[in-house]
Amino acid sequence: MRDRPWIGGALLLFLAAFAVPFWYGLPHARAGLKGPDLQLPVNQKECVAPIAFMRSSHMRLLLDWRESAVRQGNRTYISFDHKEYRKSLTRTCWQCHDRAAFCDRCHTYSGVSTPYCWNCHNQPQTNVAWRTGQ
Amino acid sequence: MKITRKDFLRLSGLSLLAAGGREAIRAVAQRNAPAAALPRKTRWGMVIDLGKCRDGCTDCVKACNATHNIPQLAQRAHEVKWIWTDPFSKVFPFAQSGYSASQESAAPVPLLCNHCENPPCTRVCPTQATWKREDGVVMMDWHRCIGCRYCIAACPYGSRSFNWEDPRPALAAVNPDFPTRTKGVVEKCNFCEERLAEGRKPACVEACTSGAFVFGNLADPDSEPRKLLRARFAIQREPELGTGPSIYYLV
Image (cartoon, rainbow over all chains, first blue to last red; front, side, top):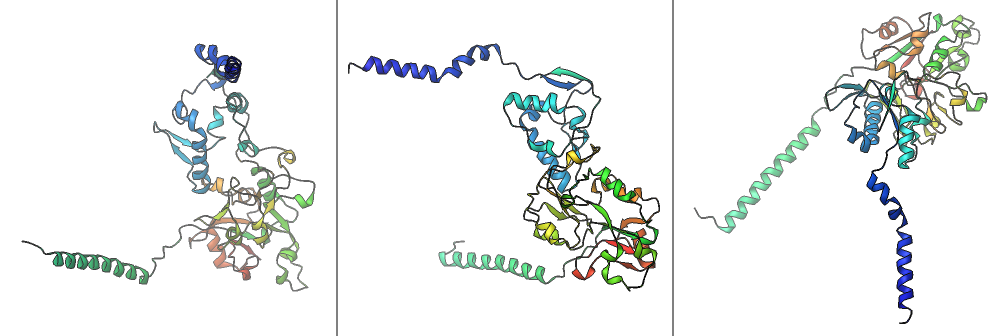
């Protein structure tokens, strides 16, 4: 029973050390984390779907496009605001987004591995005016 | 009116029997009715006039290579080809008399995927990465290909190639409108389905200056290829295999 303070102290120390990521991140969490610096096109204000949806589910949308374009031959996408888009990485997505300055930057920031789209799909040189945003 | 338990059970049983009987009659009637065979609207096909094919000309091959980012690899065993040429005697070994030296038998024959009516390659694909579309185009979905090469073994025409290495370093220029392939997938002629979707003709047909390629809808009796096939004698590659090639050669 005489060891109780030692054991208790060591346990507390262990818990404090174990929770280091939480202590360490606390001031940043209060200040608000800065997202990755992304290049966005100047002349376009919106994507093919609302930003929140694209942020969370762009991969699902891309899979849907892929399935319907390649397998069903349906190459036109009607967006939420009734605009028509071509289901094409080259002709649609990459007219506004750059691989290095958009896709890769956010994937690196979030620690998400780079998908294998790039093994086959190649980004052409685009002449888009960029601005920096998040 | 008061209903007894016995009457209730009798009525329930009879109504169940009636409902079940109706379904059974309907099922039997449907099975015996002849399946309404709808005529196919589109079957893309091609007629190649060997008489118009100039010796030594590879415009069609060059156009396809540039359009579809087909690598020119040094190692022949790794060769990737969508459209290529072979000597007549090799393509049609049974159409030889032994003495013929006409232009057709001397000039090389352009070869490509036959887009068969009954393609053996699609039957063996374990992931349905290759399949036949309604319009007759035998498609490849490289997203789904696992590189097992069953389709290469099944195709009797050698129309399929495997990417043994990354094709990108072997490309002089990349057409950004069409994806390159990656190491480990099978590829072949797609009848320019990406151009057909825009209402354009395949790249080889457009590139041919002597008009040897005639592309059109084989299901339409008034189409250009059907007119040619009515008027002249045409052969297919190994029709005895029952694959039903959509590529015809005028000799």
